[in-house]
Structure formats: structure tokens, C-alpha cells
Image (cartoon, rainbow, N blue to C red; front, side, top):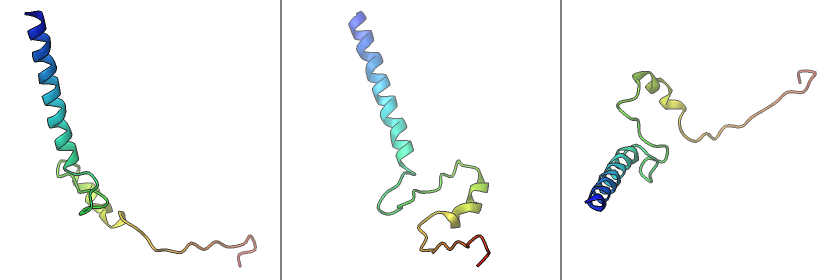
Length: 68
């Protein structure tokens, strides 16, 4: 009886861990979405920064101490 209870508990934990991973994977990085997807449960304020996500082809310039 103790063995059956232990196996049932392990099975339940296994099923719960798989289902929780599926929900996390929904918004992860993929080929279609190389930077992930927005999670609708996240605060709406995060949408303000959506233009900052991605690759940048910028060049960085620095000045000398004399300002030139």
C-alpha cells in the first residue's frame, strides 16, 4: 500500500511538472520569434519597451578628452 501511494504521488508530481513547463515554453525563444513572445499576463507597461527588443546595427563613437 505504501508503494502504491508513493508511485501515485510521484506520477502526480511528474504530470504537474510537465504541464507547468508547457506553459512556460509558450513565450520562449523560437525560430519564429527569436526574442520570445509577449506574455499577456505581464504588465501592459512592458509594451512600452517592445521597440527596444531585437538586434541593432548601430555604430558607437566616442570622443577624446579634448572633445574632438
